[in-house]
Length: 349
Image (cartoon, rainbow, N blue to C red; front, side):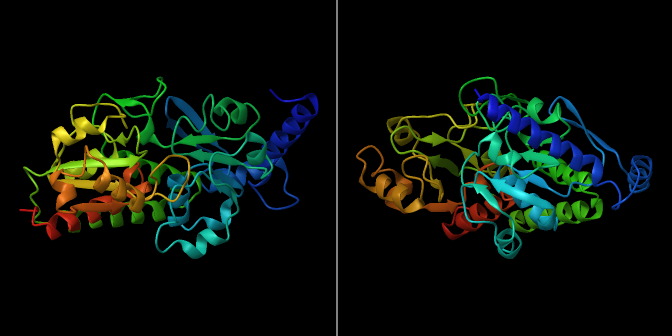
C-alpha cells in the first residue's frame, strides 16, 4: 500500500503519461482537434482485442515501456529502440544482432520493477509477455495504467487457450503455435505504425523455421526441457513454447502428459522416463538455483538419480536461452538449435 505522498506522486506521474498520449498525436503547438485529425490520417486510433480486453492507442507511442525481455526484443527487432523509454525483466543477454539498439534503451530493472519505477519513465504505452507481469502481484494491474490513459498490451501467447488463475506458470487446454507469436509481432507493429516491418519480421521467422526443419524426422526421439531450479526442477509440459519446438521437429516431449506450462517434477520420475536428449536453459538471471547450463550439467552428472541417464552418459545436451523456451520470437532460435543438436547426435532421421 502506498503512503499518501506516494499516492500523490503516482497520480501525478500517471497523469503525465496520459498527457503524453494525447500530445504525441501532432506537432508542437497543434490543437487537440488537429492532433486527432493528424492521428486519423496516419491510421490512428488503433484498436485491438487483447487477452479479453479492448486496447485503443490514439497515436504512435514515443515513450513505451516493455516489462519482459520477449516483448522488448520484438520492439527492438521492429526498429523501435528510439520509442522505448525503458525495459525490465531479463533472463538472458539480448538477442544477437540487437546489441547496439538495446544499449540505448534504459533498463529500469533486471527483474520486475515497481510500478513507481515504471511511472518514472512517463510511459505512453506498456507491454508485457505475461499476464502475471501486469496482474495482481506483478508490476501493477492493467487497470492501474489504463484508468489513467496509458494503454497496455500482453502477449497473446500467454492468454490463448491458457489458464493463468493458479499459483504456478499456468496450464494450457490446447497446444500453443507460432501463430500467437506472429500475432504479437503484427499487433505491436500496428500499434507503433510500422505494419510493413511486422510483415517482414514474420516472413523472416517463418523462413527460418522452414529452413531449420527441412528434411528432418525426429520421430521416436524423446526430449526433456529443463528451465531452472535443481531441487524441484521446472520442466516443460506438453503445450507451451517447447511444444512448438518438439512439434516442428516431429519429436516427443517425455512430459507431454502434463498440460502445466512448467510443472515441477522430481528427478526420480525424470530418470524413469530417460529422455534421449536434454534441452537445457542457459539463463543469466539469479532468481533460482542452477540457472546457468554449466551448473545444470554439473548437477546432472553428479546427482545419483540422473547421472546414469542415457542423455547424461552420452552428453546429449542442447543449450537454449530462457527466451527460446518462452513463447517469443526466439522460440524460432529454439527450433534451430534443437534441430542442429539432433542432427549432430544422429537423431534427426
